[in-house]
Image 1 (cartoon, rainbow, N blue to C red):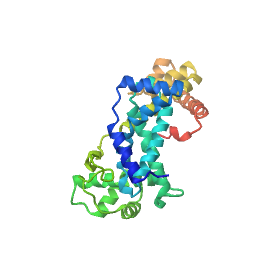
Image 2 (image 1 turned 180 degrees about the vertical axis):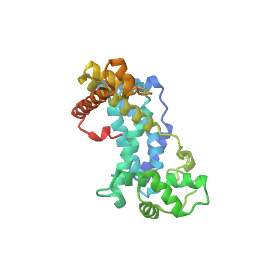
Image 3 (image 1 turned 90 degrees about the horizontal axis):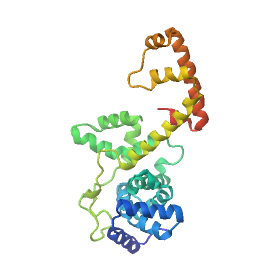
Length: 289
């Protein structure tokens, strides 16, 4: 059930007044919730980060959905982040939680926009969420671009068709809002829209997400490498796991074999690695890059 307007304003006031947590306080509360299911600790941890939920939700107001509902969905993501957070990783909770908040709100938007229901591809979803930002960035650099040129450049950047960009642009078009307008329903003391302008730099949750994915892939690779023989491992490391891969000829000389034999061993080793990696991770898309 959605919050009423008065409840929403009270939520915003409470969130804005909640004290920030130090790294030590944050870690203590996270550990108390994880280890002892201390609900008081969970409430303090989440309440201190509700302003983050409001800020993230405000970035998606141009989709025309209720801000209150998006804040509620963001709160669900915040609780999910609290349930999964590992304080010993030395990552601030706000950095980790931003990804879950944003993902929860985006899922809500996708469920409530007919434009992206059904079998929508990941590229179309990327277009849905990035069109306005990319358009503003392009026009900020080259203000004389025509709509067709803008659509073509965005299509190239996201791997979609220009006509898809044109259609999405038409559906998402709407009246511009002042950057000085209140970000949250005109509540007194709330921030302006300009306070939530998105930087071109990668979002903290994206940085953390890439770091977590990279660490997971390193673990998979380290485990899979154990299936190789000493010679196979040496060749793969010299050829594939160094900044400047060794040539077949140089490896053949150092190992006392022909470069054709090095190539055969390398191909066999890579096939063994592929099988080992797929056995350890059912999601084959994780290795598509």
